[in-house]
Image 1: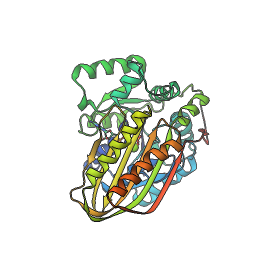
Image 2 (image 1 turned 135 degrees about the vertical axis):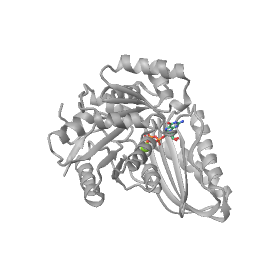
Image 3 (image 1 turned 90 degrees about the vertical axis):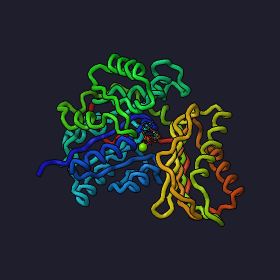
Image 4 (image 1 turned 120 degrees about the vertical axis):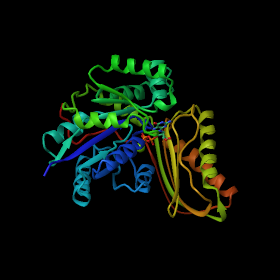
Length: 363
Ligand SMILES: Nc1nc2c(ncn2[C@@H]2O[C@H](COP(=O)(O)OP(=O)(O)OP(=O)(O)O)[C@@H](O)[C@H]2O)c(=O)[nH]1
Ligand SMILES: [Mg+2]
């Protein structure tokens, strides 16, 4: 029996990893491959897991820290997926604030610490606006340590995936491609739109055909990397909301995200990713905001109003966790009160990621 292929899709927060995984998964399913997915977060209650599961995909998550710091849990989830789903291919999404994956995931797996998986090249997805702000124009709203992390993620890529080309003019795509090829020599560069399904076939073909996997081990300063992670406040919240009459939850989501954005603008805090997911039976919506300079973006709207939903909010913001908690929760509580919504079965976690301490590091 051939080994299950493992495709790791990394990249900074909100680059489009989950959207890419969804589009790649659909593409592979059409080609009759069986697939499985592993998501990952510093906390639990993930929008991404709920989103992928709502799309009918088999998904497991590694919670409470990145793959490298939870290597055993990661390999348990790979084995569990293999046993339950017998997939030909597993797609894995590491946390968007994680890097050094070649040394801490790929090398250990290549040394056969985890058997039965054939690693495919590391793809690192990049958002064009973030690339422009953080590297090309060097007008980053983030502290320099976060820029460092962003660059390190790209440095170790086998394949750099310039995503969201549906938002760019041809000349802009050419400039960015040139920049990436010049700056990250040795990496393959592909240009795609994960959401609009542009050029995904080409990317998948590269993933499945490239023979050199995990070419570059990073030269990385873990102190700077840890500082970058610590600058980000992390909030995961889940609740059930009940209304007296059917509510337009699309409008509700838009309003709470917009209001939060306004407060964050006033506080001069940049968003890395603020996302929310609402579900009522089989009707659901997902919304994202990836920067205070951007607009709210719905990946999917709910089709009809309803009087009860499950809500998940995940926020990753350049702000300390206590402040982030009050920005998000005050805003949500206030708005829910004006709409006479009952909130129950809530769970909240709010923190800054701990210093990264990979279980293995093989340079
Ligand atoms: N226009 C456009 N938007 C995209 C594309 N791919 C993703 N997006 C949007 O970018 C936002 C973030 O996408 P995600 O797939 O959630 O990004 P991610 O990298 O998984 O984010 P984290 O898991 O939080 O790190 C969402 O609003 C997506 O709809 C694309 O190809 N074009
Ligand atoms: Mg994601």
